[in-house]
Amino acid sequence: MELISLLLVISVVIWALVIWRHFNDKLRLFHPIPVIGTLIVLTGSVISSDFWSLKLGPLPITIDRLLVGLLVCVYVVRYVARFEDRRQVNRLDVAIGLMVFVLTVSTFAHDITILENLPISRLLFFYLVPLAVYGVVRSGVLGTNDLKLISVSFIGLGIYLALTAIFETRGLTALVFPSYIMTSEFTEFLGRGRGPFLNPVSNGLFMITGFCCALMWWTSADRFGKAAIAGITLLLAIGVYSTFTRSIWLALIVACGWFIWFPASRRMKVVMAMWGLLALLALLPVYGDKLFSFKRDKEVTQNQMEKSAQMRPMFAIVAMNMFKDRPFIGCGFGQYPRAKYPYLKNPHTDQPLTSTRTLMQHNIFLAYLTETGLIGLMSLLLVIAMLVRASLIVWFNQELPFWPRHFGLLSLTFLSCDVLNGMFHDVAIIPMGNMLLFFLAGITNNIVSGQWQFERETEFAAAQQPTTTHSMALPQDNYTSSGLT
Image (spheres, rainbow, N blue to C red):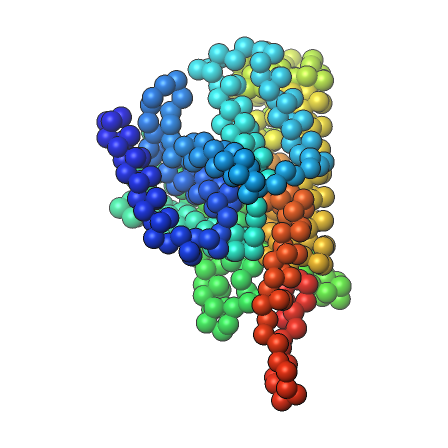
């Protein structure tokens, strides 16, 4: 089986080279670094280790991991050939590097062999590999066509995930691809739209990203295009609903709000704020109780769903008791599954803390606090602050064209949705969650540090505009710096 898989990989590489040779002229419109980075996100989402892996050593080889190696090699070759320029290190680079350094030290300062090497596996696949992708994508040449390609790719991925989520919840097993989504021995979240990630939170965040990318095309679309975008966003909204995850529903509302709020005028923002407040006051008393008691999973009753919401204070009690004993460095990255047991029997509370025995922390901030202490939590908050800063710098830079600015808004939106879900789930350990976050952070920081790329594109496009020499010629359209007519 391993030999067949290896031959399959070789054949894919050969066909990729053939395609590159025949379509080289068209492919020159794009730069290799962002294209390979996008392929990493797509293949890691659809063709994960649950679908295909090749065991040639202690670590299984997957398509996305092979592409990460290709990404690094391509960047090194292009840098040596001087197709890539060196970028200066900025605040976001320092913040991300500091966070990963803290997690690395915390990992190796404790036993890394527990639970089948869980700490080192989490560090490698949830942080070090995404960090490599961030570092290369953040430094590679990036253009407007690359951003459009990324946007279309995420829309296509979102459509696939939405259809899969709908098929899952409707019991249409034969239409679900890959089939392990319905047949996997991992039955948690079964009955919800968990997608190839086997996790409704990851699935929802990726669909919301596709939703936002679809909105980017609205202003430049004609009547037919706007109808298509409306249909795509409706499909994606149904897919998000099919996750049956409250925090994902709220995240979609936040995403819609940001993409409407930021481009709106000041007067429109006041109107939207008033209507939003009225809608919240009207709907919350009617539907508030139903949000905490509806049935979602096939293997979980409605009564158990109500208890699930009641367990969150218990996670907080366990976390705070662990924090009191190790306030600065925590129990060690990846050590929570073992270190929590002494704190599940607390004589000072009547809460049944033992009911959280088999579960991980349901809050990313408490997870960092328990495992890495205040040092780790502050490093996480620093990354969030620096990414918000970089995203806002990109969005409010009126000299940038439309697409770079809106990718700054996309980065801010995804971070908001990620943090919102992080209040109810440890989103740092959900499949492909950090990879998408680091990828978008790399794109945003690339735009911040390489603004000259897009200024050069704008100047080149302006130079290509035909000029007229007689007074009867029609005037050319004037474009603003944001790319809107």
